[in-house]
Image 1 (cartoon, rainbow, N blue to C red):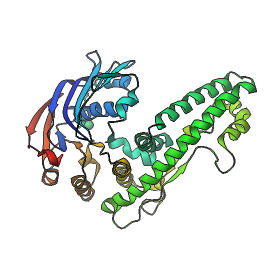
Image 2: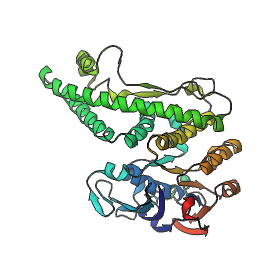
Image 3: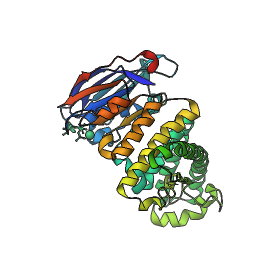
Image 4: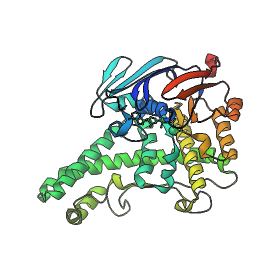
Length: 370
Ligand SMILES: Nc1ncnc2c1ncn2[C@@H]1O[C@H](COP(=O)(O)OP(=O)(O)OP(=O)(O)O)[C@@H](O)[C@H]1O
Ligand SMILES: [Mg+2]
C-alpha cells in the first residue's frame, strides 16, 4: 500500500497542506519545529485514530480552532485506488472510507496498516508494559479481524468489574462480567501469542542486519494472570476479595507484558540507551516484516527523526533494509541525507518550513517500482 496524495488541515502548525506523492520513499526535511513530525502524525491518525504523540484532544488540534482533517488517497495491495478521510474535533469525529461514512475508527484502520517509529519508541524497552502491549496488539489487530472486538469486550467487562468492586456489589453480580472478561481475555491471549511468535521469527530475520552476530532475543508473552494455575475465570473469583480491598482488578489481559529476553547479552532493562534504540527499531521493522509474511500486506512505515536516532552503521543498515522492502516509507530529518538519496531511489523530498510544504526535488517513479 502507498499514498499518492495527502491533504491535511488544522493539525498543529499545518494549516493547509496538499501533497502529491509519487515515490515509495519520502523524506521530510526542515528545521526544528517546522512541522515534519506533524505530517507523520496526520498519516498515523488514519491508521490509529490517534497520534503517536497522544490523543487528538491533547494538543494535536491547531490552536486556531476547528477540527483536524486528513484525507489520504492511496493504492491498496490489489492496485485499487482508495480514499481514507478523518475529521476530528477532539471529542468527536467523522470517518469516511471510499466515500462511505464509518461508525468505528477501526474500520478506517483495518485496511490501512501504518507503523510509526519515533524517538519515544525506545520506551518499548525501558517503559511500562502498556507500551509493549501496544506493539503486540498492532500486529494482532491487523492479522486477526476479531481481535479489536475481543479487546473492546475485555475493556468493557473490566470497567464493569472495577465498578462492582468499588460499589461493594453482591457476589452474584460478578459472575456475568467475570465470565465475559475471561472469555474475551483468553481469545485475546491466543491472538497475542500468535503475534509474538510471528514477531519473534521476523526479529530473527531483521536482527543480523542491525545487531551483527549477536543472537536475536527470544520473546515471551505473559498473559496477565497465572495461566498455569487455573483458568482466568476461576482466578478472578479467587482474587475478588483482595481486588475489592484494592478497588481494581489486579489480573487480566490489561496486565499482560512482552518480555524482550537478552538482546545484547544482557537483560533488556539493562540495555544502554543506544542499544534500546536499536532494539526498538528492530522491533518496528520486525512488526512490518511479520505482517508482510502473515498476510502479504505492506504497512506504511513512518520513521520520525531516523538519522538523529542512530549511529551511521545502524542508519545505513536500516536504509539497506528499506531499499529491499516493498512498502512506502516516510522519513523525517532536518536535512535530506545523501546516503538515503543514494539508496532509496527515487527519494521524494519535501521541504517543511513553518507548517508549509514544498517539493524540493521530485523524481518520477515508475509505477511498478511502487
Ligand atoms: N496545537 C498546536 N497549534 C499550533 N501549533 C502547534 C500546536 N502544537 C504544536 N505546534 C507547533 O507546531 C510545530 C510542530 O512541529 P513538529 O513537532 O511537527 O516539528 P518538527 O519539524 O518535527 O520539529 P523537530 O525537528 O524539532 O522534531 C511546532 O513549531 C510547535 O510549536
Ligand atoms: Mg519532529
